[in-house]
Image (cartoon, rainbow, N blue to C red; front, side, top):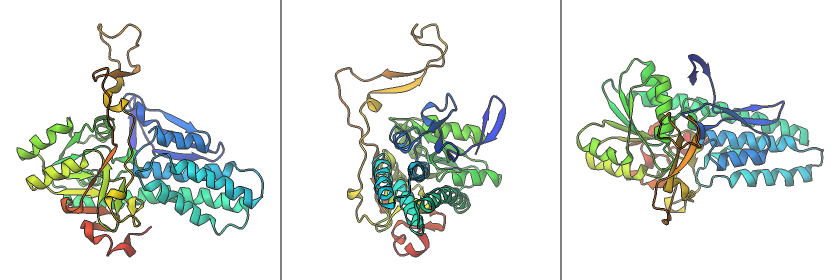
Length: 375
């Protein structure tokens, strides 16, 4: 997507690869919307740490980052001994896989890279195949998001109000996004609509990232507190809900997404509002048989107990902080602890449809259509 900074517009992707430096280039998403910065992960350990620390986040974006990180680790190997290379490669794979356990895209992405490498006879050939496969995963992610937009745009009519939760925009993918793809496609078709962005506590990706994206794209929107969605639904103020997913079970149609998604699905069913989930094919998990088997990441309690932001110009600001400086503020009672699950699971009966690159399906249709939906 295009980013306008200081009046100048330029196209960016969330993740790219610098072959000369063997580095992964990432938009530092923790600084948005207050600052736009590209950072470099100089080895696979830094790449894994960037995924873990949410420098980069979102299903497709961390999938592409994992693929590039795996290729990065492979390219860092020196020598031609294939046994030593296999051991090194296995350690790179394990380090990146452990960075974020809930999302399945990184594992699917790395498995695509690993599969492509099998045809290489030498270490050098496998290294070249690894990078080519990582680049193809990134390109495929963009194609899938564009196809999601094409299928999902027909759900949006002029005059509608659309609710989304967390960020499943282009920042969560290599480009375009999943939940936002239908919105961008509908806008390109000349449709006018309004988007409510759940703030999405505790990390506030809706308020910081989705709202920033929509503002960049000049789409009408407002940020709402997470707990305001039910009120708006009750008053008939929401016509459609589109969210993303970090792991969707192909066998059952269960959807894992940012904490609070399940709540919105329950409210949508209560008020008869269509609830859609938009996913690229890399988000599908064909192995797990139950949503209760999905590893739910527990984030640090500091995310609940306080919040990050920037200091505004004010006479009352602390003297030791400069205007525009990023700072963490403790909000909760000083002696209290917190429990912070990052995701929840929405059952298929609460989901109207899954928007995929191959079309829109009922959740329980995924398994029957698996031959069309495998990458």
